[in-house]
Length: 316
Ligand code: CP
Image 1 (cartoon, helix red, strand yellow):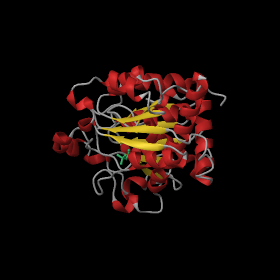
Image 2 (cartoon, protein in one colour):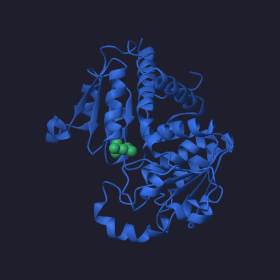
Image 3 (cartoon, rainbow, N blue to C red):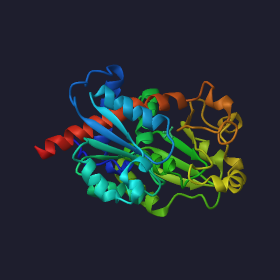
Image 4 (tube, rainbow, N blue to C red):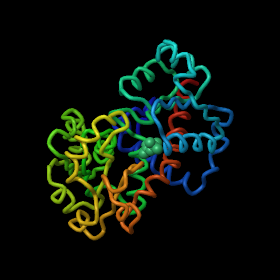
């Protein structure tokens, strides 16, 4: 690796541009030859602490671990002493002596940070309320496979600019030198600190980010149009107000008609069909969605291999 491999993957911005490129290269190679790395981490194990539901992240990490010769142990808060008051830090410290990495899906991003602070093995954020780096890696690999490049590409994110998916996709675009327009209703704008961090990196990579309230304006030059779920897992009580505020931000054929002919539609899944994206788009010829989902596995494999092998080298 020519970049600096981080100890943990908590946010996309933990990956500098060279490391990101090399991770995508490795994921591409692992996609071609899934069992080509099966001996490297043989006998190891990862923990999967999931405090929210998951289909793609949970299964892709478990299969990725298996392909690297490792076991994946599902950890349920209620079945751990965490559920009886043991601290996250004490838990991380002990788990570090059994495991080669800890993957965590939780609510507050500070929980992921606490876990990483106390852990002596890599911690991988499998989604927090603020960041979803594992998803963005699969997104970038899907885009790179489709367009054969990332640098200079244009994309639009439509809907909730405060979402973990948007935050991480923005950071992914920044590291890749992409141009992103985020279209949100008032009140759903991306956090200024996250925007500032992305703009700082974009000044070096040649990317850019702009904000609008107009979806049609956002997709006008976009080669990729990203739809995002309107009701996050931890905010079911906001479904009425969110559905009302975001109603004009559905990705459908009518919106895509304003995008360039080559534009693809993206979604991290699970989707609420007919809400933030229509079935026509999801299942249609411009959908990159299933490729994004498929790429969760090789990118998870690349992340586990890179972080764990680097950590082992650092401690020997
Ligand atoms: N996109 C994503 O993270 O899917 P899951 O919630 O099913 O893991």
